[in-house]
Each structure stands twice: as C-alpha cells, then as structure tokens.
Amino acid sequence: MVADDASRIWESRLIKHGLDEVQRLAHKRPLKPRARRFIFLRHGETEGNAKRIYQPSDIPLNPAGQAQARLAAKYLREHPVERILASDMRRAWQTAEAAAAMVGAPVIAEPRLRERWFGDLVGTSSIDLDWRNEPPNGEALHTFVTRTQAGFAAALDTDAATLLVAHGGSLYVLVFSLGAELLEQHIANATPLLFEYDAASDCWRISNIVPGFVTAGYRRTAD
Picture 1 (tube, rainbow, N blue to C red):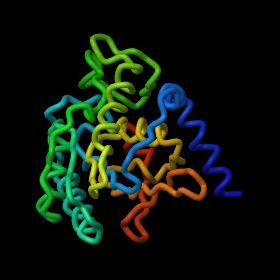
Picture 2 (cartoon, rainbow, N blue to C red; picture 1 turned 60 degrees about the horizontal axis):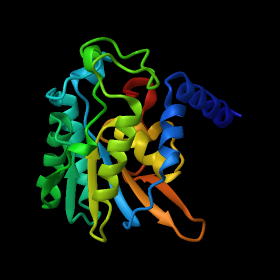
Picture 3 (cartoon, one colour; picture 1 turned 180 degrees about the vertical axis):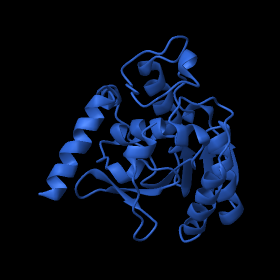
C-alpha cells in the first residue's frame, strides 16, 4: 500500500510539473541507440538547486555538490568508462572533471546535452516549474527535446563504454525517449545511473550503481 501511494504521488508530480508533455514529445522520436549499456550522471548540487531557482549556465557546484561529484566518481571506478561526454554548462563540466580524474577517461563537450534555457526566468523561483510553459526569451520545449535527443543519439552511437554527464531535464528526455521507467530516486543530484538494454523484454532498465543509496530525489531537485 505504501509503495502504491508513493507511486501515485510521483505520477501526480510528473503531471503537475508538465513532464507528461516532455514524455509525449520524446515518444514521437524514440531513441534506438547503438550502445546497449551506458552510465548517466546528473551534475552535483549547486546553490541554484538548493535555493530552487532557474539557473544561469555558469553557476558552479557548491561545496555539497563538489563532495557529491567526488563520491559518485569513486563508484564509477568499478565500471568501465572509456569516454565521457558532458554538457558544457559549468556545473555539469565540473562533475565530469571529477569523474575523469577518477576513471582516467577523456571528457568531450557535447553542447546539445545542455539544460533547457529558461530565458527571462533565470534567477527566479522554480518551485512551480511547469515544463509545458514557454519561458520568455527562452527555449521552446519542443526545441529542447529535439536538440537533446540529437545529442544523445550522437553520444550513444558507439560500442565504447560511455559516461554521460548532464542535467535533470536531459535525464527526463533520455528516459522518456528510451521508454524506460522513471523513478523518484533517479533524479537526485550526482546519482550515477546504469542503463542496460534487455533484449529479451525489449526494454531499458535503470539501476543506481551506488549500493544502498537512497535520496529525497524529486522533492528537492526536480529542476
């Protein structure tokens, strides 16, 4: 019963924040990547995350985010990583650098994995974030989804063991484009997620590579 209630609450939050529209747009062009296994890492915490505001592109990790990035990097050592593709926004790049220092793989900038640009909303509260809304002087939702899908398609057209470092919005597009199941704990900052394709069921499975790791997820870091 508790699990069912949590699931209903999560689904209602997805709708409240307009993520059902992100899902609808992503489903129009599903991803069929060559890679059958890869890792995704959302950037560590920033002051923008902590204060729940729309963030500028150059905001850095805060001390908590730096510690999160280093911890995530330690667990990445247990998984093969031959290449790292990262958003070139500062918070994602710093997280990727922490991973690179640990696994010894090069970091390649992939600007198409940048977070959606919220234009005139940057610096204002994101507590009532609704992805369906078009921000003044910002990026239209369909443009963001199409751009992000193109970045993932290029990044995952490989057999090399790949780590992707990007943002919460990027993760939504990725999961919805693959038709995978999104859970609340997947979206917390600096949570390293292993994506694996199961040929028998023709579906993608997501697992957190940090054993026993539990986060508050969506309640704190939806944006």
